[in-house]
Amino acid sequence: MTGPVEPRAGGPTALVVDDEPQMTIIIEFALQTQGFTVLTAHDGATALHLLRSHAIDLVVLDVMMPTMDGLTVCQRIRARSEVPIMLLTALAQHEDVIVGLEHGADDYVTKPFHPREVALRAQALVRRRRDPSTAIRVGQLTIDPAAQTATLARHRLDLPFTEFKLLTHLATRRGVPQSWQDLLREVWGTTDLIGGRDVVKSTVYRLRSRLAGLPGGSTYVRTLRGVGYLMPDLPPEPPTSGG
Figure 1 (cartoon, rainbow, N blue to C red):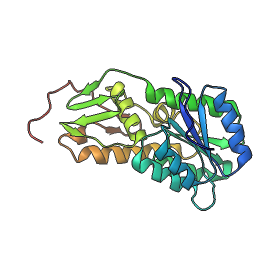
Figure 2 (cartoon, rainbow, N blue to C red):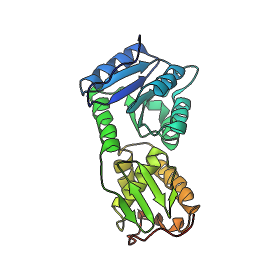
Figure 3 (cartoon, rainbow, N blue to C red):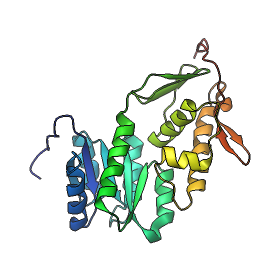
Figure 4 (cartoon, rainbow, N blue to C red):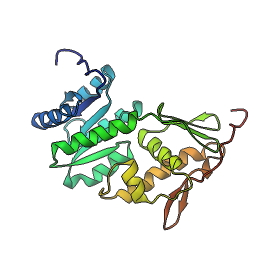
């Protein structure tokens, strides 16, 4: 690649990271048929460089790569970006998938896969990220899905993308209990993740820990034993003074 690739007008740009050239070609073609501009990298260092120099809407990332594996790349991306990340994994790597999702990946596809499945999942991830909506207010919590921001009692919540999606989902369904299966389907976009219950549980735990550090934050995500999770339908309140 001789220089920056100009994305198609209005179309999303995906970065495909896999050390197998044939695999990147397959995924690249599948994404291009759905209107994506595609950049490719065969190692983690190149992928991180492309993320710094291009506007990327989605990363498709292989878990097993030499030198810098996909989980390390995922962690480094999430430390500085909220771009959606889709993992590519072999069937025997389900433990790596769980670790990856816990570190901020948003979806996964198991090899062997149908290229169209990757393309459709990619579209869904980008669409959910770009979908504009009005601000959601619950108590002193305000969520702006379009700007991808959330504040609680005037304090900005610095949330990874998956935790932000989880918070937004619970807020839009406030007052209605959500099972872990509901959350896995709506937030992670899957119903068959091995270890899915533990992934949901650990993500809820991290989100509650962040909220608990702010005034009144411990009231927003409740566990209903044997049922699931709930955000109470609190009437919007003006933010507290100070802070």
